[in-house]
Structure formats: C-alpha cells, structure tokens
Amino acid sequence: MPYPSFLDGELELLCADKSSVDTVFASPNGQVLRAGNFRRNTFDAAVAKLRESYPELPLITPHSLRHTAASLAISSGASVLSIRRMLGHSSAAMTLDVYSDLFDDDLDAVADALDQRARNTNVGKMWANARSAKQASDSSTAGSL
Image (cartoon, rainbow, N blue to C red):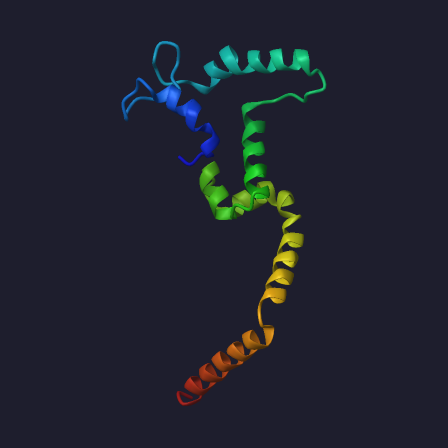
C-alpha cells in the first residue's frame, strides 16, 4: 500500500513489535479493527473534541477523508488510473464519474505544459519528424493496395 513518506516515523512506531503478518491497526484486544467500532470508539470522539476547538469545522467522516485523499492525489498530478487503484474502484470510469469536477483545473495545466514544451522544443523539427513518419507510413501502405 503506497503512502507518503512523512508517515514513515509513525508507521515504524506502530510496527515496532509486530511481525510481517500482523495487522498494523488492530482493536484494543489485537483483533482486526472493524470500521464501525473504530468510528464509534475513536474517530467520532476525536472529531467531536476537534470541533470543540474549531466549531466552524464541517462534519468530518472517514468517507470525507477518502474524498480528501483523492482530491489531494488529483491536485498532485496523479493519474486517473493511479487514483482508481488507490481507492479500489472497479474502473477508471467510476473514478471519473465521482471526481471529474476535481480535474477541471487540469485543462489549464495541460495548456501550460504544451506551452512550456513548445517553448523548449524545436517545433519545426517535431513537425518534420511527424511528416517523415507519415510519409513512411503512406509509402508502406501504398504498395500493399
């Protein structure tokens, strides 16, 4: 499971006394951590305490953190296929259906990247290479007609 390296220290502490087959996040009695139990016993209490200090904070759910992770990945330039795998979606189409509005800024990034590429590349040479490839393709298919 990929994760950002800034979590290395915390994960090392959590894994210190565990074997490679142990669960990293376990219940207090060492069993598999069930989402409902974790939410009721830990997550909701932590959010309530946080909202005492920051009452303007919107309601945070585990699912909203999933959306936050997806939006951070998108804004960091992750591909749709990478995000699909990260979230466990069955298809890239599903990922795009859910998060397509977050990709809107990508159009500006694409235009900027194309502009940068054109400024740093001999465009005439690119066109010449494209024409040569087209001519080679045309001549190879002409003989087969």
